[in-house]
Length: 282
Image (cartoon, rainbow, N blue to C red; front, side, top):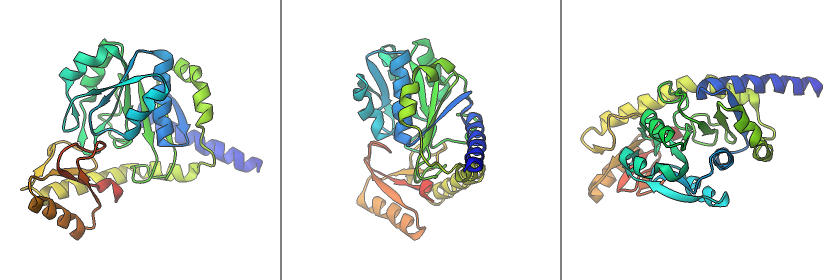
């Protein structure tokens, strides 16, 4: 039993080292769920930078971005987007009342945000930047900025790291972790398979390359359709439709190619008539 605990401790240490590299942050805390990671990140905002509002995108984020803040005494203010991509002018207008702005690196999993500019705007107004990098883990361009205060990710089903449960929160401020130790004690994962998680982390680069390659193939196959944010990157593809015939054509393509899909409008993808082709579920 003692040897098993020592082995788990070594593997956990290796996991944390990998997550430090992926998040570009010094301090990493594992959580039992992805939603626990979101709640913990918002809890950090409450402890270190309390203001009335948590800012969230008006679409392309996650369900609990909107539901968790009230539990912590925040109000929610939605920032306008262009089909998920943050409207930087609207962010500038609203950022001063924000304790934190939480957003997903890839809006709706299908289009990348301008993380650098978002961080610049928030930093100037002393609004914390919370980046949900679940979809973008392994993106060395968007996940390596020192200007992001807190990063988080889920290891749930249909995620790039698809352990099936768990997640993490990271930052560069040791005091933030120490001052919020009460919440991290509550969400500490139990019976996490660190060996399997290491295997998933080792395979992340190959899995990510597969996602991006399949997305490019889908975009090429559906080149004549209205592909949303066509020249951006993500691990899903969203295709707008204007008629039932167009919708049927997209769905038939998915069925033929054994690709799962989500019909929109849907807050966590895009709030317009579209089909989100769920490459991330492969």
